[in-house]
Every structure is written in structure tokens, then in C-alpha cells.
Amino acid sequence: MRLKPTIVLGRLDNRPESSSRTILQSTSFWIILCYSIFYLATYQYCSHAYSHDPTSFFFDPSKGYQRVYSSKREKQADAFIDSANRAGGQPSSQSSPSICLGVATIARTKEQYIRRTIGSLLEGLTDDQRGSIHLAVFFAQTDPSQHPIYNEPWLKNLANEILQYDVSNETMARLHALEENHHFWNKSMFDYQYLLKKFVDTGSDWIMIVEDDVLAKEGWYIQATDALRDIQMRMKRHEWLYLRLFYTEKLFGWNSEEWPQYLGWSMLAFVVTATTLVISRSYSRRLRKHLSNISIIVVCCLCLPATIVLYFMAGRVSMQPPPSGLHRMEQFGCCSQGLIYPRLIIPRAMDTVKHATNQRYYVDMTLERWANSEGLPRFALVPPLLQHGGSKSSKGSKFDQGANSIWNFAFENYA
Image (cartoon, rainbow, N blue to C red; front, side):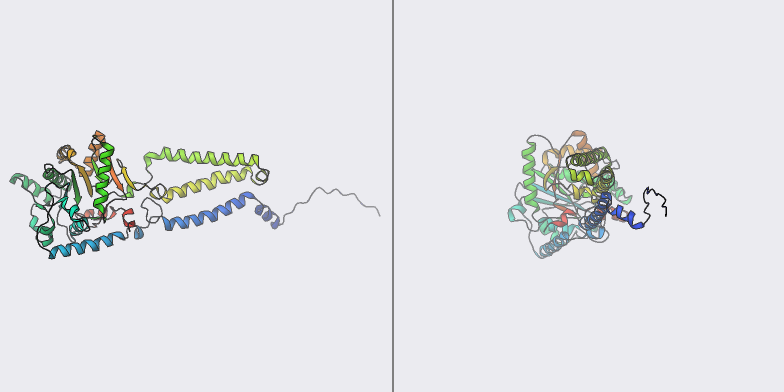
């Protein structure tokens, strides 16, 4: 029997398990699988760890706005005011107090936050510390008797001075018109200038202006006075504007003005990663076997960009937190809840506010514009010593939503 010769050219295996086996043996597949598991786990961690960061994609208002430390200070302040209501006598201060503390207040529709403001500022002070403070409460409304706290006993027992408008009839009529027409910008300018003017000739080293809806950290006095001494040593005879006691981190996010810097660092990460992988492969026989060009592309063009995106999603405050302590803060410092000025800068600050009285700016915006033009340094303590506690704006219900969002999230981490 004669057999025909056959030539075997090869075999095409169309079995599905053959292609599956090829995929499972691919380095790129395992890179994508392992990175996906890592990414999902990291994403889940970020959603929990950075829920208190207002600059983060994972920010959760129900967690971020929790009044943890604030609740403690509110209870302490309430107890202090209750005690002051029952006590008698007048507060005493040194003949030349080092700090003039002014609090301007107007009646709000419901809760009067000034009770807790004063209570938290004075609670816990030693006799010497209290004696170094001249506390003045300023009723910034044309009829102060309409303010709910006007006749409360604690006010006369705690305040060294109770101020109200002492102006001409013409000026009083103008102020009344500003109140009736809800011209908050113009009136707040006048009030701030009026309060500064009352303090300029006192001889005190420091002028501290605080809004009537803040809470002070326990021990704020020591930290503030230490910071003021530090600033004096740094600046020597150079002028500076203020020490900021409150700011909100909401303005500390990834700023669009800095996108070239972000792009530059991202490109550098790409170049370093790609170069490292290529050079490592050239020196390692094992890497040459498993790390193909496709695998390098997967790492550099898929895994790395996804990691960079997750980094930015986590939030700047979480990824690049400002270190604790005293720092210069010329940008993104909001708002005017609490500022301490050196006495020597007050006359110039008064002139600045006075000239802007008829403009549609807030006090802090006016002072910041002036400080930028003059190159005046500004300082802040991190974390801040004050928290904004008011959910009802002094400017009326239209501003309540904005008032709710003025918040420092790090303040709540105090023990």
C-alpha cells in the first residue's frame, strides 16, 4: 500500500482556553488587575479619611461640619456667662492693658451669639491675663436698647467698657438710613473705623477686633501673645498689618492660577517613572523577560495618570497640609472674624477704611487690597484660635447660607 507524503505546516488552535491562557500569562494583565485592586482600596480609604477636607472630592458636609470641639467650648462659655449673670461687681483691668479687645454686635433675628463669644474669650483666663485685657462691647446699631443683651447683668459684670454711637445728629441719621436700606457694606466700614478710633489712643500695644459670632479656643491668650512676640522679633522695626485668628480652608484648594506648576510636576512624574522602568529593564534579565513596552505604556499612561487624578481628588489640605504654628498668610485668608493689629498701624488702617466707606467692599477685602499695595506682611496661626460659630448672618437671612459655610475644619480637632 502506497502512502501519500504529507507536509505539516502548523496547527491553528481556536480553542478559547488558549487565548485565555495567553492573557493570564501577560504582564500587562496582572499590572492592570493588581492596580485596579489597589486603586479601589485606596479610593475607599480616601472617601473615609478625607471626608472632613473641604478641598477634597470626598468631602462630606455631614461629617465636616460636625461641632466636636465647638460643642465643648459652647457649654463652657454658657456656664461662664451663667455664672457672670449671678455675680456682682465691675471687671478690673490694669491701668495700661496690653490688649484692647473690641467686639461689635448687632441684634440678630434669633440666637445672640455674642454671649458665647465673650464667654469663650474670658473663660479660663487667669487674673493677670484678664487684667491685661480691656474689653469693650460696641452696640453697632442706632437703637442699642433693641439688642436682647443690652440690659443683661453679665454684660456690665464682664465688659470694661460698653460703647454706642456718640456722633452728630446728621451722622446718626445717615447710619439709620444705612440700616433701613440694608447697606451692610457701607455701615460695616463705618463701624470698624469707629471702633478702631476708640482704641487708637489707649496706649495698648495690641488692638484685637473680634466679630460677635465666634468661639475662642481654650488657652487662646497664651498662644496669641506668644505669636505676637514672635512676630515682633521677626519684623523688628518693619511694619506689618495683623495676626489672623481665623481662616477657612475652603480657599486653600488647588488654585487654577497654579496649573502650570501642577502640570510640570505631573510631567516630571511621568518622565521619572518611564525612565526608571526602562533603565531597570536594561539591567535586569528577569525584567527584560516580563516587562514589555506595552507594560511600560500601561504603567505610564494608565496607572500613573489615575494615581495623579486620585491625588488631586484627595484635596490639597490633606495632601499638602500647612504645618502647625505661625505663618505668613498674604493669600486666601478669609475672613475678618478675629484680627490683632499692632497699635502703630491703626492710624493708617483707619484712613484706608474711612476712604472706602462708600465703596461696595467688606472690611477684610479693603484691608487686603491696601496691604497688597503696600507690601504689608500678614500672619496667621495654624490651626486658628477662633471658630466661626454663627449660622445666622448679621446681614440678614439672605446671607445665612454663606455664614454657614464660613468654618474652620481643623479647629474641631482640638482635644
